[in-house]
Length: 230
Length: 270
Image 1 (cartoon, helix red, strand yellow):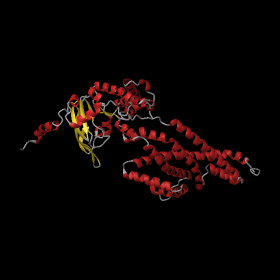
Image 2 (cartoon, one colour):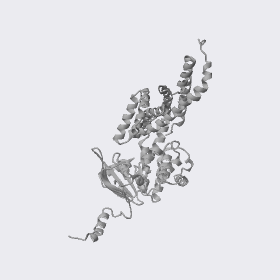
Image 3 (cartoon, chains in turn green, red):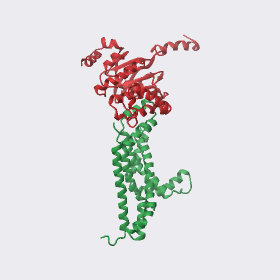
Image 4 (tube, one colour):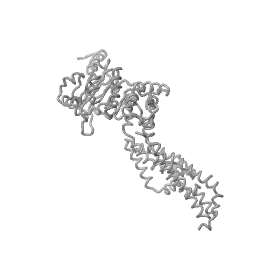
């Protein structure tokens, strides 16, 4: 049944697909995941704080982001950020934000809402006695979080954080709406240029599957290894 | 009745401030004065007053729910209270101006459930706060930590994680961790209640030794054997009140209140 297919197109375009497309995808995933976990942790701490204003602000933010389709947020940010930036800096003309920066900011802010919920569960999973012990030793709130609670919460939640990162890895393909060339975008371009749609999309699917499946397996092994003995 | 404020102020103020606590200058490490605490409508502590002198070991006992752990946690401000005052080594606990982390750094606390940090090795548990709170060097903190581990008989376990130790060993590490801050007073919150019976002894031995070394201790416990052995005074609480606050022998031999008599008969019967 593959008689009419020409898979040699894949071999010829490998340097482009991986050297540019996959590198872009992985860079965006890594940066957005890092930023998302940091911002998400802050959101989780706000949400768990005893200051009502912070709690509600964090809750509203998380609920809002989780109720919107990602594509919409990407678009929305791409067209709005230049104006927000202009307003914030007092500039008369919309500031220049590259498509990549815009995508990175969007994914960071969007994923932060999901990471925040994971970190909230992680922080809540740490017994209150741990906080009491840290405070009793004279640690400040910041030290208690940084040295005692968050290291344990991160470790407990690492499998979930990585699983969410795998989802993010797949979601980054949505940058095509900003005409950015990620792995799928690169495959799509080659497919259209050479008229080999089926071959290229099949190959792209295979690569996404291989990467995500391998990552999931690694997460599962990690989970077994890092479980804290209590 | 017109007096010169310049001359009368020092004369009148001296007896007034020292009258309620005559030992303040020389000995009172912890002074608890008329402390009351409410959880909403429910009064958990009502007008508790007592004191712990320097070098003294005070055992706080009473039925569960009597507020003894709550009172103990008020001493280092892990719990707040709405009325009264607690003074620890001259520092007022219920005072906005008080730097609570700095106060807590001088008050060691041992918890019922040990609360060692499971993500850190035993030695890191002992050095974390001395380094981050007291600003000690890693070398100095490690040296002191190893000395303390030797003192509680756990030198061989420095590199292990808390999860690899027995309950009794974990609690001895927790005592060493509190001592690593060189506290002026140690608080114990039911330190043996979560232990298997065969491990209670090893923890009590460490505490007895600590008491004999002259450490000021406030101990919430049901271990009446420990109280008999090392306590100077026993504070008996019931329903949020301090019912008896007497010398150890008086408490065990001639308890005045009916509630203390009932409590003792229940606890000592077995």
